[in-house]
Length: 267
Length: 261
Image (cartoon, rainbow over all chains, first blue to last red; front, side, top):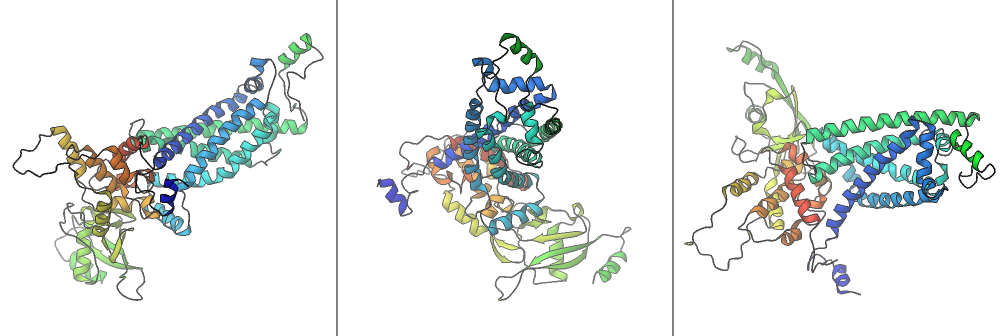
């Protein structure tokens, strides 16, 4: 047993020199949150390519599966990205849960405080607690699904998922609401916490609201676009493993019999 | 009671009839066995330029001499009369009733030890915090030489220190803090502001590592969740947000040579 452990065991750990761990954890909580919020912005733009065309969304999907680098699709590359995001997500969740009300007294006093104070930032924090708590489960389910079955991404597959194929119709709208609220409020709170960028809170608050509305609307429109496709997939008039007609043509010309190398196998 | 007051007042020289204010005051005396917290109503007629402090004084003098509340300066200087006014901490002497509705709820500050009704023992809490954070200038001088001329301080720096030194320890920031409500060991903005002030002071020889020993944990600067209630209710309008952020930035990346991992 090291000296430090013995000293810590009798409750005198803080005597010799205070641990730097709380400092690093505080920094890591902010950085992991920043990473996740920025990732979600990127994520939103990638999935929103469906609004431009199914072909563009397909291209983005294949890009992340390495098709344009290796001439072949490897969905496990997506799993790697999902794995990294999931790791950051778990770290962030573990660090953020330290701040949650942990017993009835704390919850009772915090809720009464927020209600009576009628204070914007205090109420925002409660939104973070509720949406964060919901995402322990919702985001975990989504990340797990994308990690294990990365091939379920694409115009047809995503449409099918969002039209209730695996997790229910309610899943993506609720997750979208939680992510966008938590992300935009989180970024605002990071800015006021570190004073980086050092701008007025009024401005940052307006910016946060504008970003929230923008991403919620974009998300909602994108979700509807996928759901529409999902309806067609269910009806059987949209291919689940959708491939742009131009790509099909090209391949049928070049190698009419070997499509397997390029495409992800459907179910 | 209120009708009688209205008659008295309306018989005077006033042209317009003043508003009748209803105060809902939290009454509870922990010294009285079996006493239970309750809201008691009082009605008074508003006077021009009336502050909450004046209204409470009127209630105590004319309606209920048992009502307990604190005050000293009556001018927003001492910080004694801080209380929850319609749910938010503020100084009674600086709160004009004309800015409020006709129903006003008044309660004692949370977190601090309750003496009775609206009176709380902020002094006890503040002393504990000051001792814990050693909120006094630490000099390395072995010998105190009073005849020696003091070192000159840059006026801008002196101004900055003075700005943070304006804190009157009223306790509003602590009562407005969600973290302090949930975690009773949290030092609050008042404590962090004092460290920020001493950190600026060239007469204080303590290093960042020394300050880290005092506030480098979840009861100190890293416990702050940036809800900023403190910043928004401070009657002295101290720049608490930037001061806490300043300490956080300094201490979050502090190196360690001999610390206990």
